[in-house]
Length: 302
Image 1 (cartoon, helix red, strand yellow):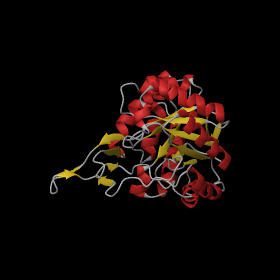
Image 2 (cartoon, rainbow, N blue to C red; image 1 turned 135 degrees about the vertical axis):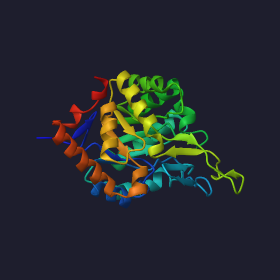
Image 3 (cartoon, rainbow, N blue to C red; image 1 turned 45 degrees about the vertical axis):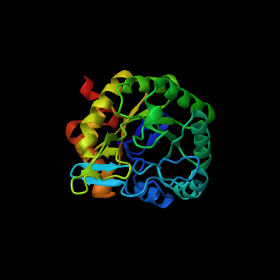
C-alpha cells in the first residue's frame, strides 16, 4: 500500500508538502490554517532579532507567471514571535522556524529561541535577494555559510535546514559547505533577482527597485538546481519554486527532492493547493506502481 510519509533527516512528515516561508507564516493562526489544509509541515515567516518594518509600498508586483516581491524582511522580532509560536504549537504537523541574521552568533541565538518556542526544525534564510546585509549577501560565500551552520548546530539539537540562493555560480559549493558543517538538509531555491518597470511612470515599480521573482516563472531553475544538488550531496534536498500542481511536485521529487515547499501557489490558488497536490500525487503513485515517495526521489538520475 502506498505511503505519502517522508522523513527529512530526523524530521518525519505525514506527506512531502510544506508551506514555504513568507506565505501565511506571520501568525500562529495562519500556520494552523495551512496545517489543517493538508500541509505536511509549515515554515514560519523569516524572523530576526529585532522588529523590522520592511520596505515602503509598493512591495509586490503580480505577473502572469508569478510575483516579484521586495518586502524587506518585515517581522515582529524574535521576542514578540513567542506569542505566535505559542499558538502554532498546536499544529498537527512540524513547525519549521525560519530565521535571518547578519552573523553566525546571531543565527545561533535565534535558533536557540525558536527551539525553546517549540520549533521542530530551523530553516536558515541564507538567500533573500533584496535585504542589505542579510540573506544572499552572506549566503553566496561557502566559508561564511559553513561557519553559520556549524555555530547553529552547536547551539540547538533540532534539525537545521539551509535555504540557498540560485543567484550564484557557487550553488553546489555552498551546499557542500552546509553538508560538511553538519547541516541536515538544503532548501532550493529562493527567489531570483528581478525587476519590473512601469512604462507610464518611467521607473521601477518596486520601492526597492529590485525584488525576488517567484512562482511558475522560476520552476525550471529550481528543478535544475535540485537535480545538481541531489547529485552532489548526501543530505536531503527540499525543492521549492513554482510548484502549483501535483505534476510540478512529482517533477521535483524525480529531480532529487525529498520534499517540496509550496508558496506562490497559495497566493494564486488558495490553501486547497495542498490537498490537490497530495491527492494527485497519490493517484499518480497508484497508477505507476510507486509504493512510497522515496521510490520516486531521484529517478530522473537513473
